[in-house]
Image 1 (tube, one colour):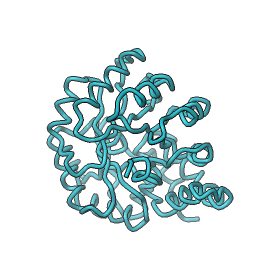
Image 2: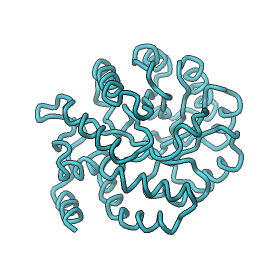
Image 3: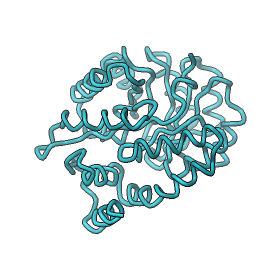
Image 4: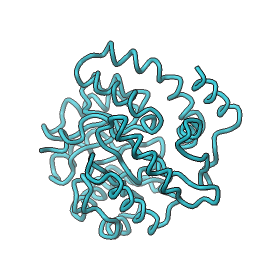
Length: 293
């Protein structure tokens, strides 16, 4: 079965819970994973940027991946994030991070060094040729400083068999519609923007890799399933109730926003590693007020 079918629906980019001493809280991670599975999400993504991967060391990443595989125990697919701005080191990571039980690799485009479109093409070509698993591109120019153009994405999709999809978080609806019009038949296109997911699904995307799903796995994945069945009125009813949460989750920093929600829900303790800090006091109170409603 193609990944376009396997990963259709809602994936959740998992947070990494920390204890008060900033060590990884594996007990809380288990609770979060159980919450995702019981909430009905189709798959999870570990080591995404929502998981604070820039502040995890290599051994921690390996341990998180192994722990996640063991906890999920094959119940749903797991996608592993392996991205960065040093192509040579990233290829080493593909051999060091355990990927044997992964459905695919999600690879965020290089940040800060802002390569040209040709540089992006050859970066991903090298990653795909080295990866033991299918590669999903991740376009998030708000974080990386460089957009992967529709032309570059389609060139990669057509030229390189091991590149099988994209998480599109550019916010550019025109670019998204060009990708949906011109993609190869089995090329997966998912939204990377919770607030735009409904209209992007209406345009033909295959699903979402969500942040909000950490806190609202059932509601968000139900909304996505309504969209995929063509029931946009039902989807809008759910989405309307989530809009205020989206706004608070991304008001300051991801994952500070969603961690505030999850703390109030009793899933985790509210700790981030520097330079990330918890949501400011006023916004956290707004989270409490919203949940109180």
